Amino acid sequence: MIAAVGLARTYKTRGKAIEAVRGVDITVNAGEIVGFLGPNGAGKTTTLKMLTTLLRPTDGSATVAGYDLRRDPQNVRRNIGYVGQAGSTLGLAKASEEIVSHARLYGIDAATAEKRGKQLLAALDLADVWERKCGSLSGGQRRRLDIAMGLIHEPKLVFLDEPSTGLDPQSRANLWTHIRKLRDEMGTTVFITTHYMDEADSLSDRLLVIDKGEIVAQGTPAELKKKVRGDTISLTLREDEHAAEAAGVAGLLAGADTPVIEGHVVRFHVPDGASALPVLLTELSRAGIEAIGVEVNRPTLDDVFLTLTGRSLRD
Ligand SMILES: Nc1ncnc2c1ncn2[C@@H]1O[C@H](COP(=O)(O)OP(=O)(O)OP(=O)(O)O)[C@@H](O)[C@H]1O
Image 1 (tube, rainbow, N blue to C red):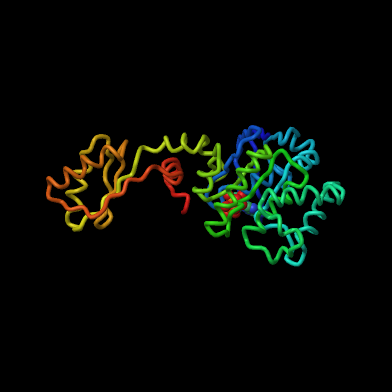
Image 2 (image 1 turned 90 degrees about the horizontal axis):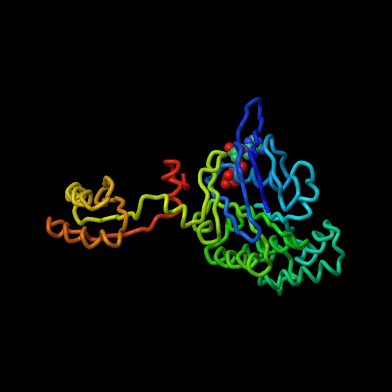
C-alpha cells in the first residue's frame, strides 16, 4: 500500500533550512494498521502530508495505493482517505450535508453518497446523527464523523493524523475499537500518526518510530519492547537512609544494572522482574531494611524510545 524510499522534506524559512524529514523508507502492507509514533516536531505530519500529496517531497520517491506520488498524485488522492488533525466539519452544517457535499467532491452522486454515508455512520455507531448539526456532537462523535467522511469514496488506505488528540479516555478507547473495525470488517489499511504510546501500543500491528526526521526503529510493539533491557523494579523504602544499602542489595541481583536512588525510591532493571522479586525481598529483610512498596513494570514504548534516543517521548 505504501512503498517510500528516501522521502525527505526540507523547509526553507527566512533563509534557514529545517530538515523536517531526512530520508525515510516506509513500507506498509495491505490490511495492516501501522502506527507512526514520535514526539512533537519529529516529522510525523510532514511525512503524512507528503504521502497524501499535500506537500511536495524535496527528495525521494513513493508509491501510495499503487500510484506514483510524483507522477500520478491525482490517482493517489482518489484512492486514499485522509483525516487531518483539525477536523473538517462546520458546526452549523448537518452531518448529512457535510457527508454528501464531501462525497460530491469525489464525483459520487447524492443518492449513493446518502446510502454509503448512512452505512458508514451505522458502522461507526453514529446512526442517529444524520440529521444532527455537527456542532451538537460530542468530541468523539465529531471525530468519528470526520473518519466517515474520509472513507466515503471507499479508499483502500486511510491516513489518520493524531485521531484521538483532545478526547477523554473513554472516547479514545471507543475510537480505537472503531479504527480496528475499519481494518477487520472493511479491510481498510490504516496509517495512523500519534504521540500517545498507549494508542500506538494498543492499535498498531506494526510501528515506525520517528525522531528528528529519521526512523529510529520499526517492528511490532512486542518486538520493539524486546530491545529494552528488561523489567523495571521500583522499590520504596520506609527510611531514606536505607536507600544506599538497599541499592547495594539490588545491584547484586542476577543481571541487575546500577540502581538509581531518588529519595526513598530505588529503581533498577533486571532481566525478569517476577523471579528477581522474592530474592530481593528476602535479602532486604535479612539486611533489616523495610520496604513499604515495590512495583515491577514491563517495558513500555517510552522505555524503547528512551533506550534508542536517550530521551523520553514525553520530553
Ligand atoms: N511549514 C513549515 N515551515 C517551517 N518549518 C516547519 C513547517 N512545518 C513543520 N515545520 C518544522 O518541521 C519539523 C517537523 O514538524 P512536523 O509538524 O512534521 O512534526 P510532528 O512530528 O508532526 O509534530 P506534532 O506531533 O507536534 O504534530 C518541526 O521542527 C517543525 O517546526
